[in-house]
Amino acid sequence: MVPALVDLALDYYRTPLAYAHLSDLRQPLPRGFEGLFSELGAALSAGRIEDTAALLSTSPAELDKAARFFARHVLLDAAGDYYRCLGLTRDADQDTVRNHYLLLMRMFHPDRLDQPGDADLAYASRINAAYQTLRDPDQRADYDETLKTSPGPRAGSDPRIFFRPALKTLPETDPYHLGAIDAATRRRFAIAALVAALALAFAYLGLKGTETPALRLGQQSPTAPPAPHYLRSSDTRQSTQPRPERPERPANPSPPATAAPASSRISPATAAARAAAPTASPGCPINWIEMQQ
Image (cartoon, rainbow, N blue to C red; front, top):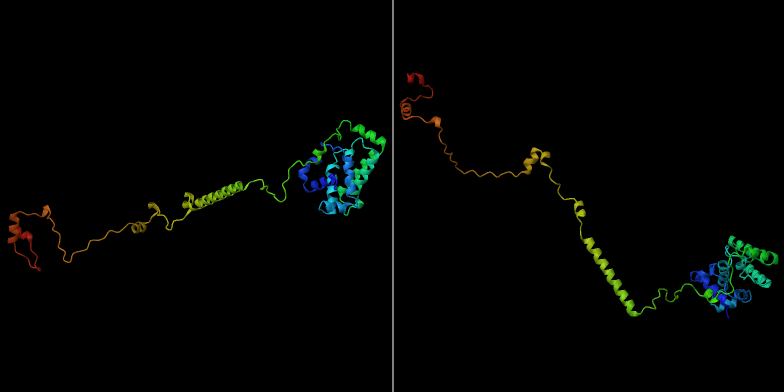
C-alpha cells in the first residue's frame, strides 16, 4: 500500500496550483504529520522506491523529484521556523528530530545529487542549522522562547484539509469539461456559433462592397476639370465655345432691296433738268458750272 503522503507529493508535483494551500505557512501541518513523513521516507528508500513507483504507475526518478518538490515548498520556506523546516511539532522528541534530519539530508545533500545547484546548497544549510539548534536541549529552549510571540504548528489541524485539493482539476480525458453538457446543449451552442459566424461574414461583405464618400473623392476622374475663365487664353475660350454654323448661299443671289436715303430724293423739276442735259462722253467732261449759267 502506498503511503498517503507519497500520493499527495506526486499529485502536488504534477498539479501544484491545485494544492497551493500546502505552501501557506499560515496553515499548520496536520495531526500525525511526523508519522506520515517517516512513512514517505521509508517508501522512497533505495530498496522500496521501485516498488512504490510501480504501484503508482510512474518512474522512481519522478517520485524522487516529487518528494524533493514537496519538501522545498511545504517545509523549507525561509520564512518558516526550524520546526516547520524539519516537519516537526514543538513537542517532538529527539529521535524524531534526528530521523527527519537524516531523511531531508538524503534528499538535499550535495553529495547525493547529480548536479546540485545553489538552491540545494541553501536548503542543506538550512536543514543542518535547524538540526543543530533543535538537537541541543539548551539551544532548543532558547529558540522556543523566541517563538512564543509567533504561532507555530498546531496539533489539532485537520488532515483532511491538508490532503484535499483547493482547486478542482478537470480529468485528462475531458480537458474542456464537455462531459457534463448534454448533447442538446452542445447542439445549441454549435448552431449559435454558426449563426454568429455567418452574420459576421455577411457584415464583412456588406462593408466591403459599399464605397464611402471619402473613397469616391479620392478617385481621380479620367478628364481634368476645366480651368477658371480668368485663366483661359483667347484660343482656349474660342476652342471651348461652339462655333455657329453658316447658312448656305443660294445659287443666284439677288441683291437686297435697299431704301434710298432721304438726302438722295430730288424734285420733279430737277429730274427733268437732268434728263434734258447733254450727256458727256467718256473722254469729254461736262462743265456743270457753264450749263447752270
